[in-house]
Image 1 (cartoon, rainbow, N blue to C red):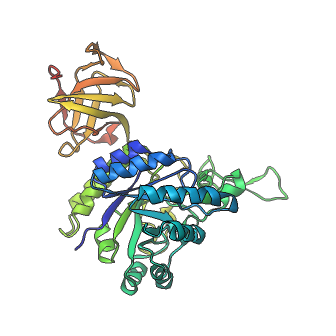
Image 2 (spheres, rainbow, N blue to C red):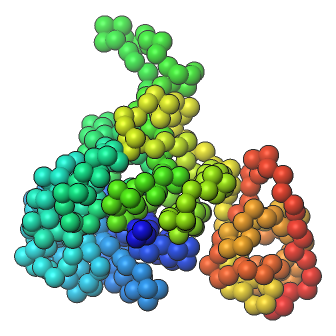
Image 3 (cartoon, rainbow, N blue to C red):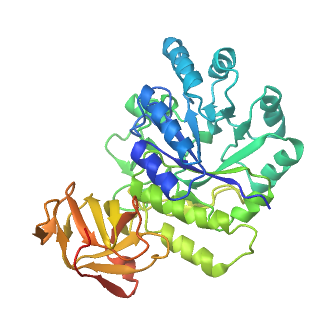
Length: 419
């Protein structure tokens, strides 16, 4: 069975580098002006050139999102952007607006086009419509079941992509107006305020100030807040249904999320065709539970979402581990680390490194950039520490907030620094 592509989010250059380091086959990136994740950090126009070049140098593909629904005021800048992308030559552009599709076809017909999930492709006829227009790939609506996907596959030859992990919009394929009405920030222009995650109470208009008792808890009701999608245990079913690309949501998430989720899905994708292993699925779910989520659901892949697929506990993310730092370089058994959180000698850490999964280490000593010993170091400092074999440049270091009650052996990393 052909292994689908693993497509990861890259909201900025650091996330791009992290996603590729942990095994993504491709990344999707964007300019905040024309992407539906305007707050993701994103890339300045000329930075897109460096991002695409970096991905290609790593043997990966880069897709640029241009999936806003444009107004007339956007068109002049859009055309300039299309000319830039024509010169940069990403592996594909992702669009949802037929007008933007037309601009690309007129100015840069050589660029492959992927149609965004925002275009609400839910049937084989719509898929054929885009196929007949020369589109390379469609990103299917999240409202489809596996059976519906299989039927679309049987009736078309176009590449199919689906989201397999990440946040789920409460609105139909993300076509949301709640944020626009409540905060004057349009989700269809990349400015979503996640209004569906807010806590709400109901009030009858003739009883001003009298709130009706409909809440899940004392903080309010979160009836529009879905759990996050997670299909880690069902990737073979999607591959058998004919999916060509597995997409991870999260251009606004941090590198801790990007690294852990990409690494876990890389292992799961590579396991496709080897048969189900319940122990591996438990391991993958345990790993994914360490990163920010609102709890998990399989969405609509197996039918309509149930009440249990909604996060009634609140709008905030759950996360058992936090980022400590990024390995800048490794020399022998010594690593130079850029800290992202405070670190003290005696702290227990984990390296997000191949072969070191589930192992905890104690910081016995550390030095600053001038070689002086430290008892503690702060966020944004660069330090040197001893590391076990297997740690690589760009690996992440994390720390469990309470290690979720898991009992693991704690190994010392002590001794003289090599360099």
